Length: 67
Image 1 (spheres, helix red, strand yellow):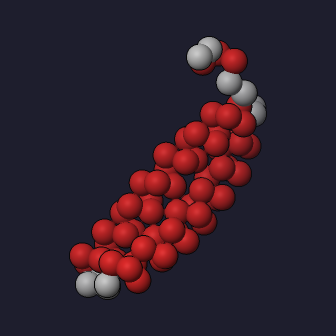
Image 2 (tube, rainbow, N blue to C red):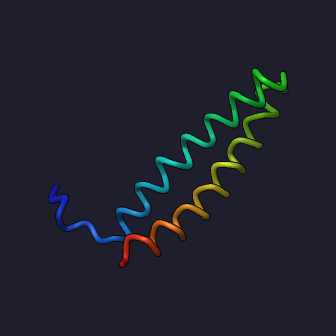
């Protein structure tokens, strides 16, 4: 795989995915262990958090990396 051929959009997508997975895992553990939610109730909330974080960070990173 040629890493130099990645476009700024590819880099933004990959970085946004890493950030979103970290945020989703953090929110899952915080809701489950910190607020003592049931794990099956905390899972959709964490997935929603990850989706929202991905969308926001992808737009921001795409804008920043195209400069």
